[in-house]
Length: 420
Image 1 (cartoon, helix red, strand yellow):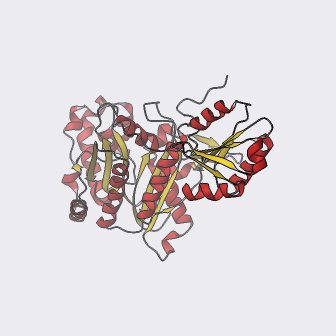
Image 2 (image 1 turned 180 degrees about the vertical axis):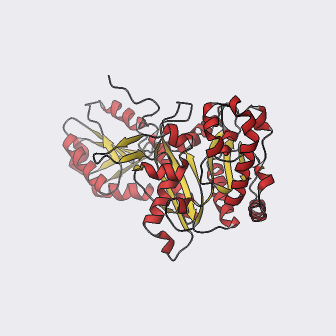
Image 3 (image 1 turned 90 degrees about the horizontal axis):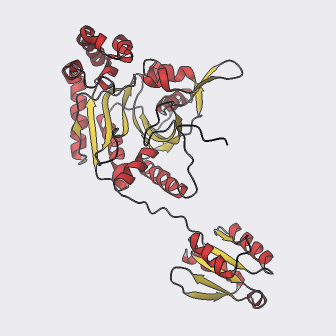
């Protein structure tokens, strides 16, 4: 027997209504903020992620699914969404559009070869937004408001939004130098990954899961002490905007986010629900000033976030929230052995009119067919017997109330549509 690849999952028909509901709600919320959907390829040039995500990150060094195509070019299944969206923004010259900033959202599978954990998969579905073309604390607040709106709209309550500023490029450069100076005397006590990152990306040492309890991590310099005046003022305005929008948040000077392209505002949404798991992060994001130029684009700035739908569903489960995402069918047609072809014809007419319907194909008795209608959550049933066909009078039964209505065949479609 061939089994499913480790770290992936089948989303079965009993679960797909919930997935469709969640994805539909995310799309609706994005539309209320005037974000437009973008769809990018599932694989891109490996160089896009090496340059855009950062060749010192765990994603690039350890987690990417990379392969050579038939022209010997290195391709990678996308591990995250931002780099691909920015690539499309540059390639399609969106910076020349009259409507700025460009506000985009996406939904799709991402691929990372990481250790299987609860709520984390090697193929997972990510929803993300990107606002490109405006460096303004107001749009940072808008993005954070959307993030908060999304999770609370599903009924989640045990949430914690953590924010920080990692400053502009000048502030980050000065801070990195301070970190190198601080960690150098102790670097031999750290894991090999942290030793490799000391000079290339020392900020990643601060969020290393292996060395998080090292004394020198706890005494490391804080980015807040290295912010220049512009970065400080920008961060203060972001916080004022969040206060105006009544968005609760917690500041954490150790939150730095690992990807190379982040500047200024960085944030994570956490679940504080008991039993959610050791990894409490639901979503992360931040501002990226310089990413477009790293990918040979214009000197525009952007901000965005990405969330895993799997972890959203896990948080809902942890808080005991059940989504009403059933997808009943409109009508189940009950047939007799000699009226099956009449049932097929009625189903065809109903379906071309946009009515969802089904009938029995296993030669069940009438009682068994009504049980099948219940299992399918049919709103109505109709019995096709020889007498009903001869008289053109059909009894529609509303399954929830049990009420019955007798109609000629030509009125069935109108009746169901009016009451649906």
